[in-house]
Amino acid sequence: MKGLRIGSLILDNPFFLAPLAGITDAPMRRLCHEQGAALTYSEMVSAKGMWYGDKNTGKLLYTYKDEGPVAIQIFGHEPEVIAFAARELSKKDGVMIDINMGCPVPKIVKNGEGSALLKDPDLIYHVVSAAVKNSDLPVTAKIRIGWDEKSINAVETAHAVEAAGAAAIAVHGRTREQYYSGKADWSQIAAVKRAVDIPVIGNGDVTDGSSAVRMMKETGCDFVMIARGALGNPWIFREALAAWKGEPIPQPPSAEEKKTMMLRHLKDLAELKGEYAAVREMRKHVGWYLKGVKGAAAFRGKVNSLTSMADLAEAIKNI
Image (cartoon, rainbow, N blue to C red; front, side, top):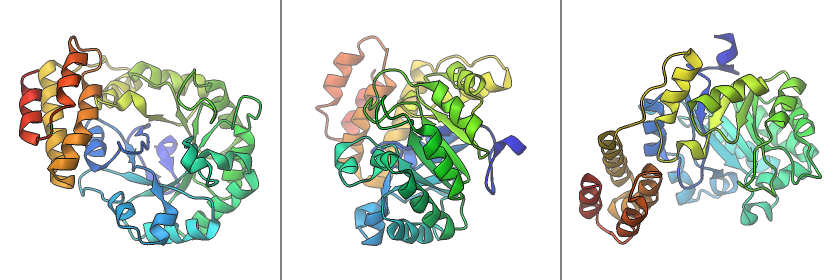
């Protein structure tokens, strides 16, 4: 089990659900854990929001007792605020603290947070160090390979993260300027793996079980973080597990399996957030669950006009 450890945290397998804003809430995380994800990440949580005691920020920290290990991802750029958040998170149910250094969204970047940190490895060192010194939990960071193709600095950034005492580093193989387009550069993940002694978590362009295992083989990374590949597809984790173990890849989920999963997802959302929010959030999930299914576009159009849980559940049953 030596290779499946991040600090004091021992993990069952190398496959993680990535942090996705507006998506990886407790219901989504639990479904992915049940399908085999060894570790899931919260939505991105504002350290400044925690500092000010923001009510909505607090809601993002909710975890189920039975959803498996959860890493809480925070974002911020002020070491003293990060230190406060780390102390607070040590009292919560998360098993690990991750610091976001990859979010490309302009409103985050203009505040010097997310991928803006990639421009300042010295500040990265102080931010990570502040978290490490103020929490007993393992602290990690999630980076991109650079701001743009002319400023690839993944190895330099990784050295700063490691020197600050981080227990692992996650590398998304795209630049900030790529956002989520183009191809992830796995060679940069491999370069980081060669450059540091802490575990490396690879991220980018993992769309099925075989590509998850291929990333490990091609980059040498210790763990794989799956993001968009898990949207509407928590079954990707059972695929990845089978591929990793050298077992036959399970059959894709049947139409009935998908319906059952969608209804469960809707029910869990409603119990946690109430009918109004659940229906509106579930509409986007339905689109992802039905990706590639004949007639999905027309069905999505119908679903997007529904406002009650009963109507949405009935529509799902009649797909």
